[in-house]
Amino acid sequence: MPSLLITGAAVATVDPSGTEHRRGFVVVADGVVAAVGAGDPPAGTTADRVVDGRGHLLTPGFVNTHHHLYQWATRGFAVDAGLFEWLTTLYPVWARLDATDVEAAARAGLARLALTGCTTTTDHHYLHPRDGGDQLAATVEAARAVGLRFSPTRGSMDLGASAGGLPPDSVVETVDAVLAATADAVARFHDTAPGSMVRVGAAPCSPFSVSPDLLRQTAAQAADLGIRRHTHLAETADEEEFCARTFGRRPVEVLEDLGWLGPDVWLAHCVHLSDADIATLARTGTSVAHCPSSNARLGAGIARTRDLLAAGVPVGLGVDGAASSEQGSLADELRQMLYVARAVGGPDAVSARDALRAATVGGATCLGRADEIGSIEVGKRADLALWDLTGLGHADLDDPVVALVVGPTPPLALSTVEGRVVVEDGRLRTTDVDRAVADLVAARGRVLARG
Image 1 (cartoon, one colour):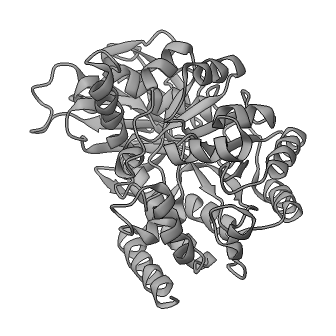
Image 2: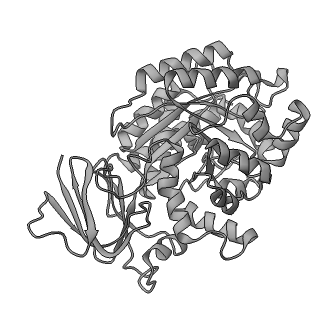
Image 3: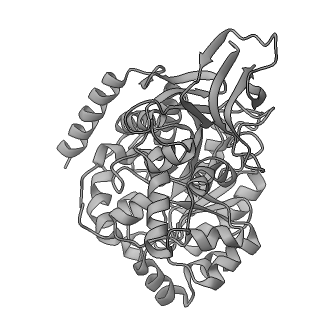
């Protein structure tokens, strides 16, 4: 693997001390960070490729903690609806997807993530239509093609409309089928080696689409398999009312009762939390995937990120599914996180560096990979993003981190995953974007025609 030397850039390492260099260097060798420091590299430092980073900011690659990649083929539906109406509108559309459609949607969504600084992403694929093919495998293949580090989750729903749940019966599975499919996904794709490109998790969908039995059994299975767990929680007031009516408990209490909190769990959204809920998440070491754009788009509310961070709850950022956040840009979520927190908490609620930390090491913590990615430190994987701050939108901003977070999204000059170039000069180098667009449009056409 070619070695790489980046010189002259501002460097935000996002290490535990928050080390930053106004002008620094990073050396990459064998897919890992071999050296990082201020000023010029030591005399005699060589590399196969040298990049002049003057006028640029080097950050860790961003880590996306919540997505539904299949939704990229169904953007623009129910744009004025809340979560439950949005879901009931889209469930019948999603039920028509097959693996070919999912691969096209996933490749487009992953390409968008890559072009906005993301180097690692998860995916929550919880909908498995009958005769829809191997859709989880389709997402894994799309991630391989785009070149992103991938943490797919084998999602599930077993509580259909006839049993009091929200999804139609045609897209739910039995508990036994879910457990068998999860074990199969782990056997085929899960790689525990250092620097692995694929790690699989278990992800029942939400308290209003899965049974308590499914949650209990997936928790036990995940422990046996040594994999992480993910689900939606406390996204809307409707969900809070559903849990009160069905279980007599708040959503966080429901999960704790079922053994579904802990340091191996990360939860999407967590908008509607009480002080006691936040204390419970902190006590159990549970992480939160904050999705500010999606929460705003669906009118779900604003997560209490300031209080979560103050309590010591790890917080990462997520773009969420493209049918509830059509942008699909992780870089934009940093600004959204800062803005929505300040809208309710004042100008000191969240800083630019809080947002950068959530997008990097916070996300890595959610995915259980903070020992390998999320910061620029010697020995960590070389997942990097180099942002061009020389143009009209940024040249007069003295603080490069503020320029990245509060200014317009800068051009991405270079990104690497495991030291391999994924984006260069704003162009994806791993897959054909024009073909991805054509395949996406064709997939959407097929899905709509099946209606």
